[in-house]
Image (cartoon, rainbow, N blue to C red):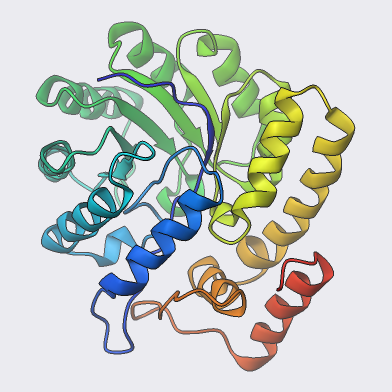
Length: 297
């Protein structure tokens, strides 16, 4: 099933108890916080969801809880990428069986694939499932950037490819993807500081870490842009970029996002080891930016 892939989506956290188990109650509460804030969909089991630390059974569980709690209110794009093609196909089939409307598939990490290997990896996934696929480029975690021409080739060959999330932070890369495929697939900013630039270039929205903490602010940016109020959109982008600098660039983003949500009164839980909670001085830094941006109650 295809759906309109545009707007603002949080690649959301997975809350854990101090002992390291998934906190279902906190997850359900957070799902409602994001949906009620006006986001256009949810993305469980991505990078911010600590997917590499989750077992396949835990990934199934998180997706199932989110599907149940959302109850059809917004689309769910499940993160299903893994190191191997075989495992990625299995995880994508799981997401399809559980009722997700799409899959966000990160490029394989640890071993760097060639362009041909990357094409065949995605081709195998696309031929094995009927779920719409969003290609996920995140050099920060994979160690390399997907060649835009690999994305172009896949988009031309498979209508099932409906979008790309680009977290490179490289405007030239994003512009090239939009030039090649902007009329055929959705191009979404993967970092909070490139949201407006991506939209101005012809992109369709964002799947960005800061949406976890400031969903209304990010939705406000998108809505201002759609109304043609570029001055307001620019003002909001500067606030979003300031938040992104602290939560994503300066500190460990998993721990920082969870601390920020806790300051907002949300049940964000703990990071899973080896990630540790922020130190006290870093927690104060997070609190300070939330106060500066008037995001605290």
